[in-house]
Image 1 (cartoon, one colour):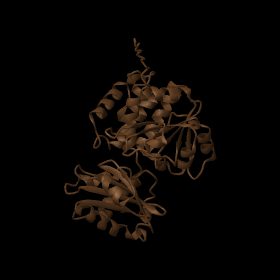
Image 2 (cartoon, one colour; image 1 turned 90 degrees about the vertical axis):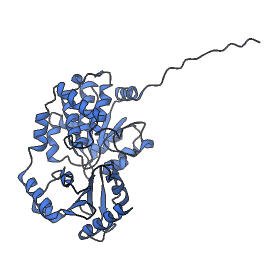
Image 3 (cartoon, helix red, strand yellow; image 1 turned 90 degrees about the horizontal axis):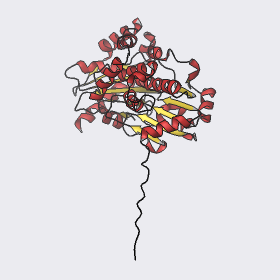
Image 4 (tube, helix red, strand yellow; image 1 turned 30 degrees about the vertical axis):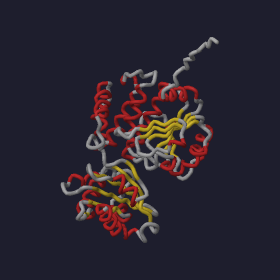
Length: 357
């Protein structure tokens, strides 16, 4: 009996960039979201994606911030139609309604919906297609339809840059990125690498070189980021380094910024960005921990030198995590410590334990 064998050649599945292109092209209402307490990378990747969608796709797109963008980063929003930017805060019905009617949600620079604070339930319960673009460890893959996750990259801004280069409107040519998009991505990458002092890969320098060649004004970005602070920020820094910083025998430098000191210097959100990195310039310091008092907890930022895991410390003692040399978390009172005044004793205890294990 003769047997006829028929070979069926199936079309290859779309790659992830093709899928994103299809989702963005077919969506009638797109909402972008980033993590709570937005930093430069969150604002950079968020506004970069927004600019691309508006100018290259002609999309109906909006960027929702869980809370207010710090004044020090507000320059990144200039040039964007204010109607395309929303802040959820304690409950903005306009932002909630926007998410409810969206058919595509894109989360950037956050590994999980839990990192979006008050937006979490709105995003999680939405029936829209969901896309994640992030560079942190352990992304919540099951919650998204499409996940771009790469830890070996400097920032969400760099990851987004590599994605957009593969989109059909850009076709590998950085000069075809909208100017606002290109500038936002450069800014986000610059802040997350602490101006090329950490988490720098060959691709990071390549990105910077290509964007400068494409016309991005890096000097203007640096002036806006690092030469436009209030006088009080520098005076606060002097107080923290001169009066508040302590160094343990294990080589952990830590600073506790209490509410009283915040009020004394009239501190505003975002003004302490980068402070946690400064103690690492001391030779004997292996890890730097910076605590900022909030209503019922301390926000904790941790940075470390190679060979010491900031991520592990954040996971074990501060309900957090992040990258190997850059992580964060929270210290609750009266949950973890009886009162705010007990933060110093807690740091001394857990860091000694951390370096003994």
